[in-house]
Image 1 (tube, rainbow over the protein chains, first blue to last red):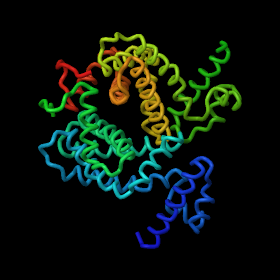
Image 2 (cartoon, rainbow over the protein chains, first blue to last red):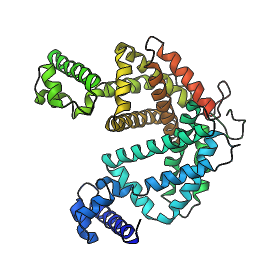
Image 3 (cartoon, each protein chain N blue to C red):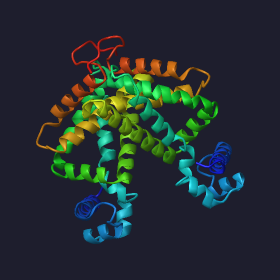
Image 4 (cartoon, rainbow over the protein chains, first blue to last red):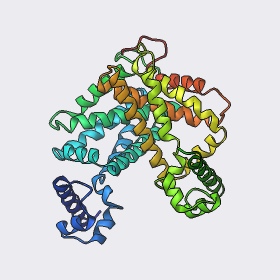
Length: 194
Length: 194
């Protein structure tokens, strides 16, 4: 992507976040976002398919990073741990968002249509993880459950981490995985069936 | 709901399913559904907020049934098993759909917008289950994980069961729960942390 294109996308994202945080997601129009960013509506729709997407601009790169990490993960790890490790490594890149993580999380929670889009992105992420696990030799059923579980752990961990973005994301993920194991009756430290 | 209202909703659902199965979900309009059912567009929108909802007409009643079953479930069951038991009992009512379960599943898989609506319904179901678990004294984190896991098990089991609706839904749920436990490293039969 050329430098000016990336700048335009970032200006649009920044303008959108500022307006959403001030006036709420629902009341802000695409025209207002582009006006604030000093760009045209056409420019907006070159970068984002709709108003919702401006809050999910990083989702595709994030998913690509997770897939790359998983493909490179130690083959000896059981599927759930491999998927969690890949999400953890990709998630550490989110630290650069800093305080906007909390604002973004709260915006998503404030709007049904943003929650819907978030569900779609997380489902897509789980499907992508399950596909990579299958290429590692994991049966489809195990891959599906491990991938969906890892994404559930990630979403809960991310929402926690957004409250305190100075904390190491890896530590939040491990704590959340432990919480998950306790919740579904799989105490940490016991042998895993793989 | 008055008898004639229920009949209208059922006629619209039947007409919609018939058209969707013949020509695909995307190509069928609400006008065509209402024409086939011998009703007006106004009648359609009295029953369904949009074209997608015609395939999710039972979701609200299903969720209500699951919540009722969970509230009445043995307090001694750990959260995940209680949630799975409630989904199993409510799911047995789905047997009346018979062969249309497979057609419905395949229609949902064929359309991104139907997949999105399905994700929203399943997320709503998980939220409702987590709330009931909390009223039983389960901490919020455990309730969230148990509810989301139970719904994941249910969605996988339902897709399996749709291929063979003469099979006992309860047996499919138990088998799927076992698959889940193996996938995430929690073999059946060991003590659960609650």
